[in-house]
Image (cartoon, rainbow, N blue to C red; front, side, top):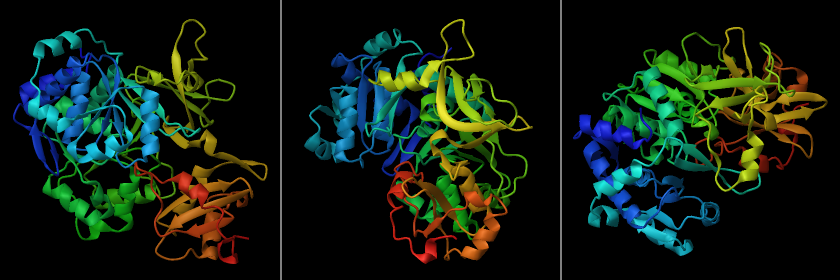
Length: 513
């Protein structure tokens, strides 16, 4: 039984010592080289007598970042990936929360970090060039660790402006990866095309599938996602067979009709998570790439990446919602009403999770932790924590879980309770737009639609088609065409940026009567 993710790399390096583990734009590294490099980082940290501490990693996604993660875990500590493109104030805010004295970076970012960071800065290239391994010291520390020790902390945005550091355990990741390997039958023949930044929890699946199976991880350059045709070429050049991407990337490929001229020849598994995947765009993929397996994964960072999954096998119309499916192995899903009772079939409730996948909490933030990691209200007999996701779902007649929207995205408009996600699904169902996002102007009590399309939205046709999906009171009152939907650093639609745009001039062309 594995108690630490370093057990994966030990087994895999023994089986496939010379196989390529990671490939990035600067080269590649084998599994035996990865293990040796990680142990050099661990020896450096153990010499500094640091244990069970958060250690920040300030570098872009590359093989050196993964070496740093592995070394930190070998040393009995846990890693915290930082975004090198984040404002200095946000990076400093995270470092203050961590109260950690050490940051690992690379030569390319040392000067940038030194300008605003007063911590001890270790340069990965120097460690790998000068540090020897101390196998005995590493084994001594690993033997004392247990599976509930932290493996990493990923910082998500906080409602107050201070980022929240979600702390995940080794057991959470081991359960998740073992489930994924079993469910998707991934082995050493797979080539994984990484899209997610390492400070985004979707990258957990990419990294640890590589650790556990001997699959090769190809770190795809970020700029290729702006040029989908070149992205497809890159997939083919590297024979990528497995991707776990945010839906926006798949949507963009569909909107540009890339498959009319070229297709990813080796792709077999298309997994997506992070936001709602519109069936309109998924149907494009299924039409042009019918031999691929498609799966919709769901889960917030607080439950070790994903807690439900849905392998897409039946047909869906463009305007249907795609289920988030069924609980992952060793995760239990509770759909709770406002009265803390289990919701009936087709009754909306908040999705709550119990099991070893639940995070340990928010680092250095007991108040926020205790608000969402709470005692299971269905269990009055012994302590049992559940995580309240804040997401509204229901279970349909097929016992599939259907995502409705965020509790905090539920608005009350003209006396009606409305989910903004439902309006977005209806807009996409009209076939008149490529991408859309709906926000609520609380000051003026108006539903605001932002959309991308090749042409201006024909208001008459739009209104007529929308009334086929939603009642009149759910129609957007303001619509605005944007050249490009703003995205956050994780590749999701930036709803905060859109909310700032609601004060645009309300002329007669963008008001629905």
